[in-house]
Image (cartoon, rainbow, N blue to C red):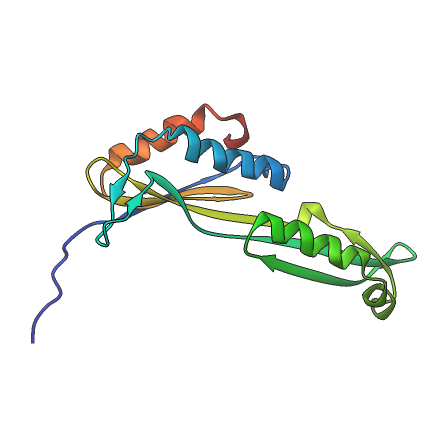
Length: 167
């Protein structure tokens, strides 16, 4: 019987943030900054179909809004809305907040629980060595995954050290 032979060593590292990222606008600004400024020195490439791919792209993302229903100071219900984009996140939360039939059915007034909301965006980065790796941002963490060269972690870590929101 054949054995599995290790071909690569992919690593993962995580940074827990001292303070969660304040809101979805700040979160998106951080993501857009990484894409626009390319602080990790990534390079664009051409995929096997001949299509150009940017150096840093959004690979996966989702945003979860939380709405609680309160009656007499007591939480009587809650709705969690996972959305595929920030635009959908904001639209879905607004829709639930304005839905009087839902508030009546829940037996309380709809209130946004922004502190309970979560954000997730995974960026795919293409290193000059041709390796792809991922930098995943949540409201409370930054994770580097699928990298092989420790220089990648060092570069991302040095950048994060200079960003106050990522302390």
